[in-house]
Image (cartoon, rainbow, N blue to C red; front, side, top):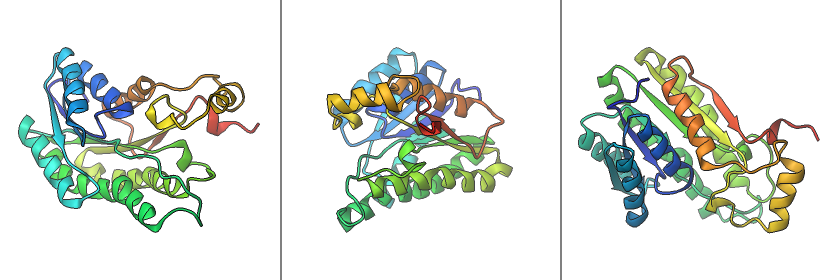
Amino acid sequence: MNLTGKCCLITGGTSGIGAAAAVELARRGADIAINGRDAERGRRVCEAIEAAGRRGWFVAGDIARPEACARVVEQAAEAAGRLDVLIHSAGGPVPGSLVDVAPEAWYAAFDVHVHAIFHLARAAVPWMKKQGGGAVVLIGSGAGLRGCLGAIAYGVVKGALPHFARAMARELADDNIRVNSVSPGVIRTPFQDFLTPEQVANNIRNRIPLHREGTPEDVAAAIALLVENEFITGEDLVIDGGQTMRMV
């Protein structure tokens, strides 16, 4: 997909991976609508988008609510006059083991990670069909590929996203709408701030074969690849420095 003049909607686009993807795709020619709940952070990302020479919009909304998903999509598409790309990056940590996690936290995790993309995609796909195709990228996690102690809800919802991508990819292929996911490992964003210095050092020394944490820009480049390459669909791209492939 040539991104020049295309419109991308990015949930969770005000920080971390979502914000990095917004800037990367703007540099490649796209106009960007970012969704989040912090208007000030949204303003700063929009300034970075505009500095890349493209239009940027902040669309406020809590996408854990189905009605907000439809509104966010419509506002983004109406602002640009089209919608070509949907990236679902919104989410956050959900600590707790099977017996410790609060039921409310379990349900809320599904609302923002899984249920949201159901409602977002249902609203976005008709716009993409008008353009003759489109691309959807879901942000999973290495925690969704392997068992992760103390975060069962987070692991389960992130594990659902690659299969959600595969199911949508198969269903939407005839409409030239490609759907993929990425599964990042340890990426240096505020999401990782709970790690102690000792845990960070252990990750780099012993758990990540490339011996460094990833950056939001690393993931943004992978997202851009999946958006632009017109012969990839139904795939999950793991970007974790080799962490989940190692035996020891």
